Image (tube, rainbow, N blue to C red; front, top):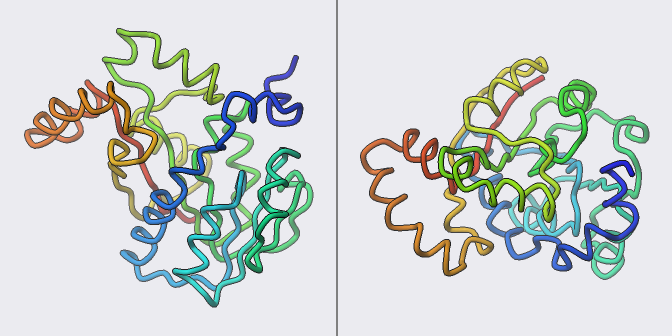
Length: 232
């Protein structure tokens, strides 16, 4: 069975019934921060792999004049769109096959680690917008490799076929023809999904080590994600 079937047959929804909606506002704030930090006030935003559409709904309040468009291939995501569109255009389509518009901003938030061939996916996306915002979970760390279970969980439950460190994520984006403008850690330990007993236990050592050297802390203990602003 092709791994992409999990997004078509309902098995992804069964494993993730809330569709990560609890983290949508937090992710939207990361997008807002990197765009405003680089003086970008977009008039059009498209999100590839928009899921429930909640990130776009939050961005509606931040950029009220922007045209917002969301794409996803999962029929189960459409239930959330039908409930409340807020003037956002949603398409149950393959973005690369359906889109004919060059948007100002393309969002790809926790997406390309899910696809079978991230290089082709990123290369095909490059001509569809002027600027790109990528959000990438940094699953790969010394601790996750030693424990193994976190990497297996990310693969089986969430569907992460590829695992990244900060440097590997940035190199992948550059290898696919993008120029990186800005990037930052997004403090994933402050996201709603990290508020677990194990996550709280890990907070103190991660915080203490990050005070000494943030990059070293993430490489050893993980628990972070990365947001990148790039142009094609």
